[in-house]
Amino acid sequence: MKRWLLSLLARPEAPEEVGELQERFLVAGLGNPGPRYVLTRHNVGFLVVDRLAEAAGLSWRQKGRAFVASWRGGWLMKPATYMNDSGEAVAPFVRYYKIPLERLLVVHDDMDLPLGRMRLRRGGGSGGQKGVQSIINSLGGADFDRLRVGVGRPPQGWSAVDWVLSRFDESERPLLEKVLEQAAAAVALWQSQGLLRAQQKYNGLDLGEAAKGEDQGG
Image (cartoon, rainbow, N blue to C red; front, top):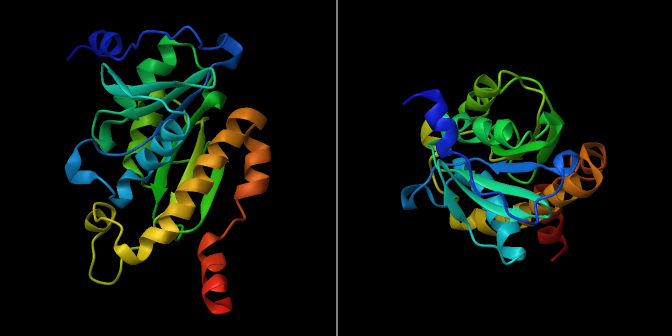
């Protein structure tokens, strides 16, 4: 499909409450669409923005190659492409609405962090995360913000692909709930007070260790 047509398809209607140019932002949670991928590790970005939309009473609307919701004068997004083509949804949206790269936050899974840890940063490589790499390639630059949400390394005998496409098991669900709550709060702080403040509060957080302490204390 021609690039200009992909760009056209990705344009949502601009909601009235969206802020002025200097205030516009986009939070893109990455994942794979469809019931097959619900609650998989690769879809933790979807889970975070779903949590934000639910808390604000928002409904998702499909516009072109993404599901979008207006939030706090900007947008939440879940690309309707598969993970590896996330840039085909994110980049046209960013260009059409002239969103500065420093006001783009991409929320995604990260195997180099254990479940219970998260890390905010600006720029750098993709770390092998193909959705992030697709966004870098489509934007022609990497100077956007990321919220990396830990899902841990695969156990012995598991491939990386099988691991990220596996569902969180029941024993992980209580910790996952805490992660989603805190990751959503980190996004809200990024939106209101900026990257540095969010990094200071959340980059050192270890919910897994806190949970172990609660178990031992109980």
